[in-house]
Amino acid sequence: MKVLVTGAAGFIGFHVSRKLLDKGVEVVGIDNLNVYYDPKLKEHRKSLLNSDGKFHFYKIDLKNKDDVDELFEKENPTHVIHLAAQAGVRYSIENPYAYIDSNVVGFMNILEACRHFPVDHLLYASSSSVYGGNKAVPFSTNHNVDHPVSLYAATKKSNELMAHTYSHLYDIPTTGLRFFTVYGPLGRPDMAYFSFTDRILSGESINIYNHGEMERDFTYIDDIVSAILKLVDKAPASNESWDETQGDLSESFAPYKIYNIGNNSPIKLMRFVNALESALGVKAEKKFMAMQPGDVKRTYADVSDLERDIDFRPSTTIEEGLEKFVEWYRSYYRNS
Image (cartoon, rainbow, N blue to C red):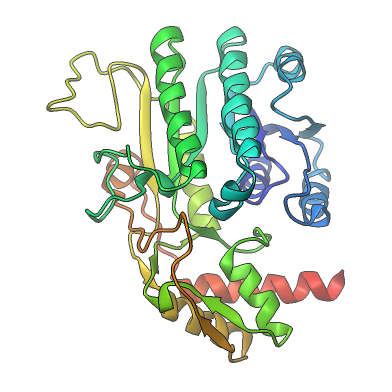
């Protein structure tokens, strides 16, 4: 097995690459090391991977098709875990074209490379944001997801449609992973838990949106990685008898599958803030604000098919996860 991980210097990509290397798997990493957030953190993650002779890194922007094709031809990966993307709901309102370039054009180039240099399995990051304005909870992969409330969500839904098309036309096994609010050590500074920590320790106030009436299905990074690694060698098969009026919408007549990866336990925003305050040993000054454009009030993952297919269910509590994050945060910024 040789695994290509896109976004290898990113949050999830780093942790996935590290775990694969720990298991003795050869990993080819791609990242463009952009400046969406502090590139020093991306370089730090990359440095923690470069110590292993089985890791090969390429600085490549996925929207450059020739570079992607050249890499596939040279490295000939057996599996692809596509985690590179322009993330962030609110940033997509300010910079929409960045999302088309990275999340649509970039993904198209990955699909084309998997077509011309066949792989055993393509896993790719989708998002809980595809559930958009849905009211029914928990969010199920068998629910319709045609009502996004941000461009970011629309690009992730587009990825699922594009993957299905390529699975059907070219028999490429694809698995989409709808991640639910991933957090943990070496995380993304633009995420609430990270920016809240920055502001609390700097004595600044934090903004609590929708006046605290929010819930998120926070999912610890180790649980995300465990699920991904269990799915890598479980390429989906075609279901020739599939019927959309009776069948599961997360599978198809093509070798295609969608999973939720979430904690299956939505946390009220104020419990999250209290847990972070406890981990930091500092009380936050809070400003209660109105709802932000593109945001949703609640996320809640149904992970029954994840349990059925790989006998796995995320289980890390928000208190446990934030303690580990704060421990890493203090160590990293103390040393740097």
